Figure 1 (cartoon, rainbow, N blue to C red):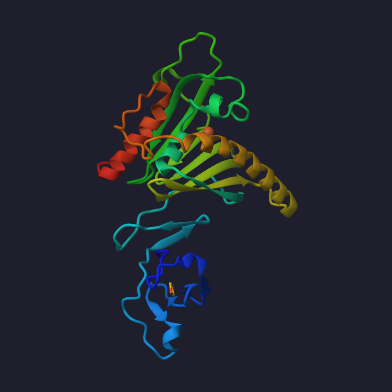
Figure 2 (figure 1 turned 90 degrees about the horizontal axis):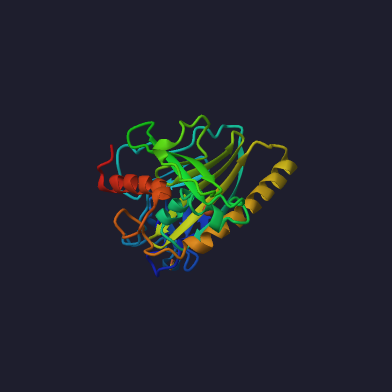
Length: 286
Ligand code: FES
Ligand SMILES: [Fe+2]
């Protein structure tokens, strides 16, 4: 439901639930699941609310603890929702949420950017001064029509004067990808079969994104689970803040294929992402 009371413009999200209705916090008007106003308390319990009091609603679906909203025109059937099937049922997660004042595609590109590791993350995951970027290797896969998955393998090395290998010169990967991105907006760092970091990027508008960062693991004992989830999340926060500080300064806010950036070989996953995103927007994807 749109977060705007048609009476006098208050955010309904600060209201409360009354049965299946949302009650606006300002003057108590109530709206049902179709967005129709069912009650205007000031007009008395027997009054019929004016028809014009209607809030726009959107079809939603909840899966894997994420709520998806369909922004487009209503349809008979809706497309399948993306997920990483390799995240098995036994895994539990803790979530943290963070607001980034940037376009969602910038936040996504950052997660596919392997060139930044020894700089932004010098003190954490980018330790070791591996500034030379071989490849990287980015492949695309599709499980069903309209589905697009990017797999990414990283081969950064310490620079000893060697020439970085082109993606085509890299050996055929024998292990699972380090990173995966699935269109719409899901990313995972496949640390181990029982350990993942997943990010769902929720677009707010052209200059704001909400990041839902999840730490998936298999420790189920309540206390251990809590401690482990907490420590894992704390580590993620440190790394995520290192990225955020830099990425939110990128201009223009909204990236695309032809925005005048001068890209290098190591940026190839970003080009793969930009091409696919453009094709999806234009409706020309295969
Ligand atoms: S602004 Fe919502 S009831 Fe008045
Ligand atoms: Fe990063």
